Image (cartoon, rainbow, N blue to C red; front, side, top):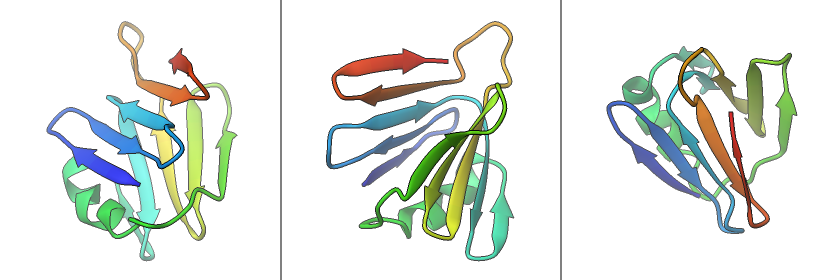
Amino acid sequence: MHVCVGQNDLQLHFDNGASFTIESSIQFRGDGKLYSDFASSATPLANLLGTVVTGCTANGTKRLVVSFGKDTLEIVDDSEHYESFKLKFGGREFIV
């Protein structure tokens, strides 16, 4: 996994060509702590390098939860006017 953190976005790129580009709110639960912004979650997310995704589920209509074993990244679709995130997988792109 490759992790890119900017002031206004978070990108996760995986070995199989899948990727997330996130421009909305997140909640990352790792190391027993909760991180709610890109800057504070950068180091804990980087600690996941080499970890595989163990699950990806929709939590209602406005949330996507990506699991890395015991750690989870919740992506929140919280914008009424702009894209919240993009998922590229299997040659297709999904924009939410």
